[in-house]
Length: 340
Image (cartoon, rainbow, N blue to C red; front, side):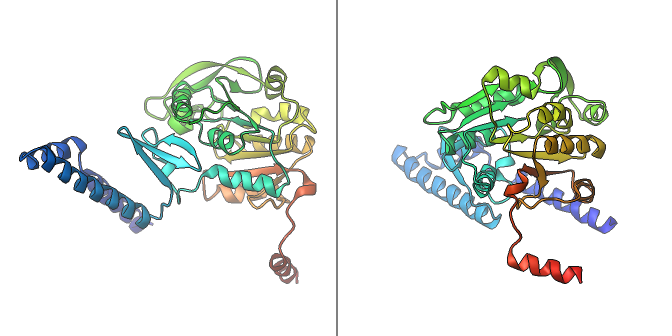
């Protein structure tokens, strides 16, 4: 283990040195001006060659890193294009993770597997809008309601929303927290992607992050929000609030028959006992927990304990048991062999 840690540290040092060698835009422009002192025509020619080389190098680097997404460079800004939905890459490096495929695409594909053509999607913990904006762009006939109470995330969400062309008339941003009670609740500010409503289970962890402070934000319950917004049925309820998911259990249980599917992050940021209550609430609402391929998880708590032992968080589905995906033939054979 010590050797692995040392290798990891050395890798980070190399990465930081590499980033330090990346060309500085201001210095590069100054060098270009100096090299093109013979006249404006010479400058334009050298500029064309420089930009061509820079873009080619960037494309080759993306390919070698296994990133196949689309990038738009416009007016000095870098935007990521996810199937027509544009996002500012200057706010976060998150868009360059994995292979560049839009995360919302896999979720919409699973809804199709469930036979759902969503008319109403609620995104609880919308952050800077990556999923909400993608859903709204891909399903213009669907009403998408995004909930995000953290001021820094709201600013990022609105920045991304302003990039959309044409504007998204089917997306609503609610700058309030979804919680277990109406009124005002404490949440963290300055924790970036980890910003969340502050519970006894996460105050110490969040408080240990440099620069984090507390802020009171308006809040209400899920069922109350639905009444306020005129939502009778939710085709997809997405919840990702960094350990703040279990307090929504009571409202979810009360909405039996009104939630057709849910996509929920479960993490080490709350207890297994708290998530057990959330799982029970979904069962009361008529939904069972399923893994990413929509197969039912027969022993949810044991399954979660095993998976959270190797990673801080994972996403699960809650679906109508009648729509559970049947095992493929090869999987059925393997189960029979395992049972012998």
